[in-house]
Length: 335
Ligand SMILES: C[S@@+](CC[C@H](N)C(=O)[O-])C[C@H]1O[C@@H](n2cnc3c(N)ncnc32)[C@H](O)[C@@H]1O
Image (tube, rainbow, N blue to C red; front, top):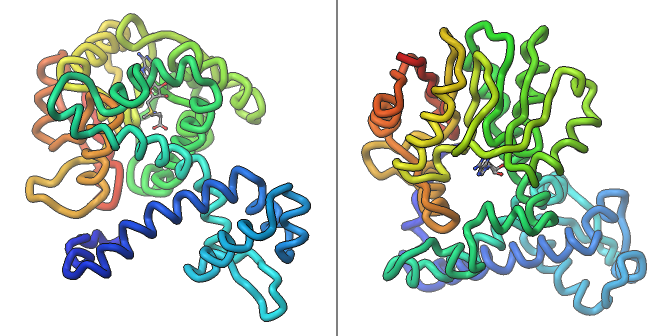
């Protein structure tokens, strides 16, 4: 999708208000109607307010106001007889439910950006009192929702990943910080005859284990809990999707060095992350860079910054498949 600058909304106060107010209100409306089951019910078929209110046990008056808001913005449909129905955007809103919930978490944390800028700690730590992955380890519902969000992100980039990039032949791939296993399972499906290890923090690995067990590819997957700051399993391909962007340079060098100790000779590292343009550009890399400043100590990086991390951790950049619209694949090999 073309990157468009938000500057046009700042040309006058009315468009600025429309942008900011609707972004916040739309997120709230979508989250409320996803969480109360109204959207799932609408996706089953048309219904009026009374039916939706009764089946989802929410007050009809306020429900109608939320539905009318989303109707006004063409996210659902309303017929002349007052019946609401789903359209293609309603399905997108449902598919993106974990993303929308995580965005709400990010908005809470982001409200502390000014405090974080003037002191130590990330905005997330200022709001929630602990680093994001510790928070997820002690909040399984939030962790599962974040895992769903990550799976949604993976599905967004999957077409690019398999159409534009081919991994060199490998026998075992470890997906480092592999969340619920969406990427690993997609890779195993694309590369028959290979095996995979899903590696993530113990609490996340525990949630992922149940999801992976339901896959027809489960017998090719081992789920391992641990920390990439300590030790990772041995393999000949390591994928790190949206991992390095969570951490500062020193932490990234630590992660890469841990992998360097385990990787077999001839093995490869595939970093799947945004590449920031040298010239400020209104694309996903630029906005996610700020999101990383909210969530943790990380950042999105320029290609030269990845090269420097590799060089300092015992690798060299070998090749890259650039994705102008999203995550690129940057492969490095041990030296
Ligand atoms: C931004 S998510 C990316 C998830 C997945 N790679 C993807 O792209 O869908 C970061 C992942 O790193 C995991 N993680 C964080 N700290 C970790 C650690 N010390 N060891 C292993 N995994 C960790 C998190 O649990 C989370 O699943």
